Structures are given as C-alpha cells and as structure tokens.
Image (tube, rainbow, N blue to C red; front, side, top):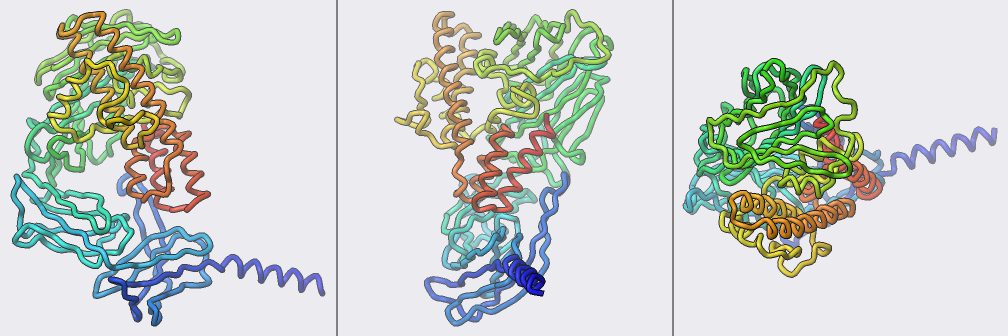
Length: 548
C-alpha cells in the first residue's frame, strides 16, 4: 500500500512539474503601467512547404486582464511555442516565443518608427505603409502625409519589425528597429530585361551518364533606374544548349518557364536599381548531338563568364575567343576558360575535345577540394558556387559568398584603383586587422578581395600591368583573401546568438557550411531555444542539401 502511495505521489509531482511552466510580464506606455489591458495567449503551430515557406497557425488558449500594476501571468502551462498578444487603443501587439520553464514578455509601448517615402529625391503623399512583426503579422498601417512622412506611434520597445511599402503594385520590405527613422526609396517598375546585365556567369562541367553535366551560377545586376518587377511576373533568362536533359534549378517550379534553348525564372521579389539576383541551374547535354560544341548565347550584356573542367573528366574545353588557364592544385589540374564583356546576342562556341561517351558517369564528381588559393587563381571563379559543387566531403560546404553589396560606382572605382597597393589590410575597414573585424565587416572585406582580384585580371588582360607586377599582386591578394575566408569561417563558428533574430537571419544566409550551422543549432537549443532562429538555421541546412 505504501509503495502504491509513493508511486502515486511521484506521479503527481511529475505531472505538476510538467505543467509548471509560465509566461508573465507587464504592459506599460511612456513610463506608465497599464492596468485593465487584455492579454491573450495562443498556442503556435508552424508548418512549412516549398511553396509557402513557414506558415504559423494560432490556437487561442486563454485571455486575462492586467492587474492594477499592469502585470499579467499565464501559469500552469506546458512548454512549447506560444504567442502573447496585448490589445491597447485598438492595436494588437504580439510576440512569439519558445517556452521552456518560465519566460517574461514585457510590452513597453513607448517607441516610434518614422520616415519618408522618396522617389527621385521627392517625397510622396498617400503611399500605404504597414508595420509587421518579425513573423509577418500586421500590427499597424498608415499612409504618408502631405510631406511624404509616415509615423507609427506607441511601438513596442526592444523589438525588430518589418516595414512594408506598396508603390505601383511593387512591394518594398525593410527590417527596422523600434525608435528607428527609416526612409524608403521607391521606383517606377519594369519587366523589360534591357535594364539587366549579367555580372558573373560561372559554369562547371563534369562527366555524367549519357553526357556532360553543367552546373551554372548566374548573378544578374539591375543597371537601370527602374525596379525590375511585375505583379504579373517578370522573368530573367539563362541560355542553354538545345536538347538538354535532367534540368534542375533552385527556383520554385511555379516560377520557371522552359524553352528549347533557354530557361526563364521569375525572381518573385523586386530587383532594385543597383541590386543583384542570383540563381543556379544544372542539366546534362550530349556533345554527340551538338557535334562536340557547347553553345552559350548571351541574352544580356555579360561582364564575366568562366567555364571550369577538371582534367579528370577525360575531355577538354577550347575556344579561340577565351583566355585559357591550366591550374594545378593538390594533384588535380583544371582547365579554365574566361570571357569578359560579352555583348548581348553574341554566341560563344566552346569546343569539347576528346569526349568519349559513358553510360555511368563519374562517381564522386564533387568529393574533392579545390583549395581557396586555386579558386582565386582561376580569376575569382564563383567561390560559393564551386564550394557548393566541389566540397571537402559530401554534403559539407564552406562559407557561402555574400550577394553583391550595395556599393556606389565611386566606391567600386576606388576598389579598382586601390588594387595596385600591395596591402593585405583592407581599406574598407580603416585601421582594423582582419582578426578584429565583425562578421558583416568580413563579408564586405571578402567582396572587396574578390573584386580586387577580378580587377587585377582585367588590367592584366588589357595589358595595363606587366607580368611580374601581375604575379606579385596576385600573390598578395590571394593571401589576403585566404586570411579573410579563414577568419570568416571562424566568425561564423563563434556567431553571437544574443543578437536579434532578424540580424542573425541575414548572417546565417551567408553561411554555407552545414557543420557550422549544426553547431549553431545546438548552441541555440542549449541557450534561448528560439523556435524562429532554429527554423531559420534548419531551413538554411535544407536549402544547402537541396542544392547539392
């Protein structure tokens, strides 16, 4: 009997402990506690799909009113994901949280977010503006006044938000913090591809069953003065040989149109003037059906194209119009063809030499490493793309390159002019050693390093610098880039997870090493255990594995 009683008592204690979690907090505004405010608690369920991304659904659980001191408490609840909403002056403020044990969610409705909507250096009246929380739930909406200004008052402090602007059916979204002043520049829109150029087009060839596998990374640049977007879809195009098979892309199927000699992809989001959009495709083409010619047509003016093939593939690549290099690293030899400033509507004929059909393809096509030095030697061949395709070991990547930063023409020219100075400390972060730089500063430094290398190649090809000077400068820039990439990996491993989720999301988007991401995930689980951040990391891992 005593034994049964002991078991019963232990069961009661266990059940009580399992439901002992609670959420408490306070509601105030401009330093005053707010009694009598409605606070609602909902359970959050998150579902995910390739078409919609993460979708949150909410199941109401409980409502209460703040006490005379503006405090509230939801007690005796289970661990899990919740949303707490507070209604004040007709506005619903909310916060999602992952609960483990006890949590405090305070609402300090005292801040202000404001700014102007600008077009061609003039402010605009009557433009709708929305303020959303970080999961996309709308909190407030307004429109710009006669001066072009928008204002959101009584914003919850210490929070990050999404600012949404819609102008001529083009959506603009910015991350903002409470009390921040943020101006948004809007543009006329176009879906005419004349505003686009191809900044880089990197192609990797490898042996495959019944043909040659082509992996291609293309980065588009909007050089016009209009935003590239249409609510009825606007497509960017990539040319392909005719008769290809096994076509794949990292774009969603709903955004893809195929033609016999090209693929057209809707970026879905606006490409602002000066911004870039990148996409990857892969396919297999059969040289026997094209008389051993790989034909690449230019849909847009293209600044830089490279083709890379490992000699282990058993075939060669030749073109009378390309600069050809043979790069040797760690016992492997790579043929690289480089084309620069190729105009629209021009075609490139790349001859495939020595190709012998294979029924099986090559096993372990991407299971060896091209060292960073080799990537740089090639002439800034797309580091992120190669690292996605040629990894140190299967399903493990190195840091993925950052999309092009928003830099002015003057800044780009300064980077080109500075290339003749053999200094391994960047001019982008004056006086700072690489080891002292933040994650964001290292990303900027990496971009600057690759731009310097590309500029050096262009100057050498144009005959502006001599061979000895070219080799010396290339060595310096290689060493600098290697140091930056090494430090960037170290910074990713030691990322400060105490930062707001929206800031971490931007950094995580630039990490391409699954090992690092898994370590960050473990750290978050052992720390704050925020479901939003865990989902961001897990989604990044899924994206990498899907693109391998």
